[in-house]
Amino acid sequence: MKISNVASGYGLSQVLFGVSVSIAPGEVLAVLGRNGMGKTTLVRTLFGQLPLQTGSIHFAGHDISGWASDRIARLGVAIVPEGRQCFPNLTVREHLTAFADQRNPGMHAGWDAERVFDMFPRLRERASNMGNQLSGGEQQMLAIGRALVTNPRLLILDEATEGLAPKVRDEIWRCLAQLRRQGQTILVIDKYVDRLIGLADRHAILERGRVVWSGTSAGLAGDRALWHRYLGV
Image 1 (tube, helix red, strand yellow):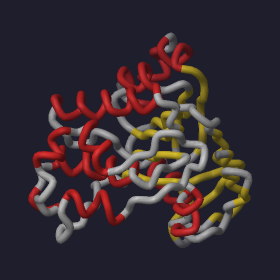
Image 2 (cartoon, helix red, strand yellow):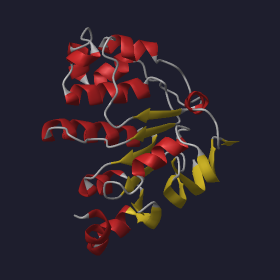
Image 3 (cartoon, one colour):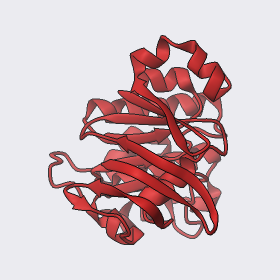
């Protein structure tokens, strides 16, 4: 995906100002920044939930600027949204079968419910439970599994481990590391910089709707002044 000079916002309130980032196939990109700096707005814009004011978004050989969200999803973009948004009246297994699709023609071993259960054994134990009967951590596992069974070209996680207990966070980081080894393209937003440095290939820091720094994990790890200035770490 290539995001070029994107401006976006909510009504008359502009949030993003000329944002440009890219994600190569098989790469993990972390988008960092304090709360309110435009990270979720960026995700909503590239997923077609907010209109572009200027700029363009290209993905899988298409200019998807202005496309509807469902059309972008069918092209192979899957999102694990902030807040999980699991359906309260669907069981775990129904979530993983209702959304099953193959949106990445280049994928050799596709994702299905059983493969998700292998990654998250806790979901197998909860397979007949409704979405509203799960803990926050189980809902996050389900939201990831629901995205994976679409077999996406690009997986987006907005606040990947927000509000989760340390043990569950470790489970999510283990999952993401495994997906990276398998070549899944990922855009991830989270506040745990140390964990993202170990996961991501590249990072982009947003400050007041602008990219103020981008670079590799090695570059971010070696410049703690960036952490203090832009991330409050």
